[in-house]
Length: 485
Image (cartoon, rainbow, N blue to C red; front, side):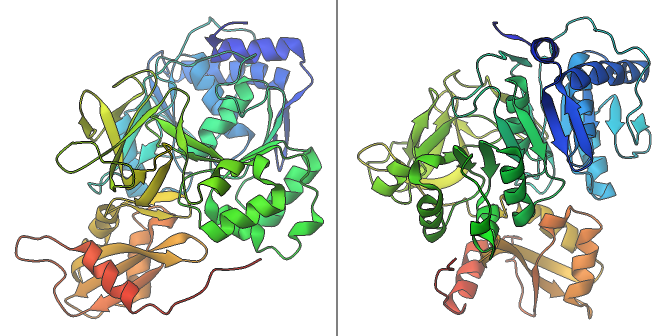
């Protein structure tokens, strides 16, 4: 079979083996036939509520069968699935919805919008007219400006059920999905797997023991994780009691992996079963590195893959020499400007479309990429991007706060934790400030630690030197050796 719409893929897979499991969650299952027919029924309900081809449908549901059905229903109408956290604070949800301007919000209430809390299925679950979603997904990002943005995939919703979108997904395999589907990585691999006939096992939330139990029970072959998950699995006392022999590929991404943890997983599973990817939601290019390659180039995130290209540039825009650190730029096989568009932000591009995720790094003589650090602002906490400006805006809205600065500090579990420095004009506690932010931002953006300071945090021009503040705190931080398992 050649490229087909998402609806066509689901229908073809249902025709081939209607009883095979497509989706498993803690409450039950969907077979391929049930997924196809029930998403038809949900799509008819969505259409009756006003969803049309080219619209966005905001999906604010937790991991589970309902999330998958809602997205499939949107695609069957030619709409774009726009996932958000089911626990998103009202202010942040309203800001995202204002950008997306969806014709329907599923799983949440937003004033002035057509909303449904739960899925309602039309009695008619027969086939629908075949349409293709012109832009198949639109996940969110906090953005370096402190305001949310949408990253809209400008590639259409077409797939081939016989040929997986990436070679490390195997048709008909079982995939455990431990991460939240409102994040791009879990969303992307879950649905790419579904579209090539995989069974996806959805965890409502990550738990190390539940993850290993799901791999064992379902004989899973593939899982995508972030280093925080890897560390929690590694520290699980009963880790060795689970049978994970079925796993042929563990793909990790989303944050730098500490070398000690990487080596631990390579020793545990075997180098040939661990794959690392460096990329962004924008799809502007990727690098991949296998376990054996990492052992030969420890610390690298790999070489360009799937037709991508990588450059490392000096501040003047010229190319760095091997070993010289600069800003990392990527270009996909499809060329500039073809993979995504922002809503609420502007891309940083040079030389006809090369784009950066804001990372610093270098290439070695063999073309392997090494990352030196994230950009000065971005914090990677538990595999999630946190932009200081967004958290600072929430803190600064508190009546007792004169100014704030948010930085990332090393954390044994999360990689980096969100740390807030606050200059207050009136007595206020760290707990009060954390509760204030929690009312305005999703949980992973709430500062884990708050430091009340008396000196000004910004100069007369309103600038803050986050790198200097972070360096000062790192200099006084007690040293600690690598964790062990």
